[in-house]
Image (cartoon, rainbow, N blue to C red; front, top):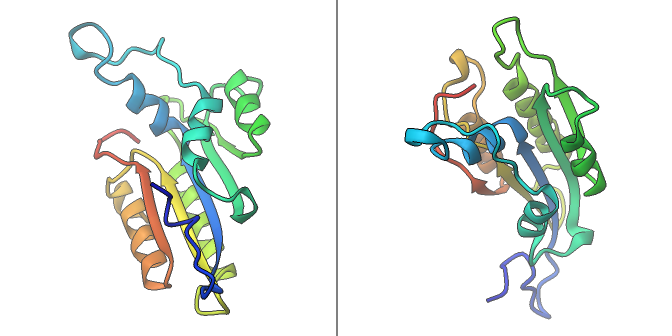
Length: 173
């Protein structure tokens, strides 16, 4: 079955701008949760970034992909995971962790990136449908700051199509 992103009829003049935003920390933690002894997190579990990108971008016209962003926090900038994302043409935006080993405003940074994309690419301008593909594990309230559910709502209100490829509710972050 073809993805609706590839399906264009001869009468359709609609074009697509696809914007992919990945929350790397939640992605990795989600893969590790429940994999260890007694259902604990197994930090040894890794994700093959190249294979994941193939899945994310499958059935999409690569020319339509305008934005590839991945956000994360330490491990250090020299960690291999960031090289893997960059090899797949993803812009890596990194933040430090607090002294309590918690992410510091990573979600807010990704929310800001998405809001900026929305403002720069309003769907009601022309025949270009804006599509956000969000890969994250956060559905939390983000300490009463902006949240991924808030950002998805804003995108939808601006005429965007939103696809949540890897979403689950968790209290991490």
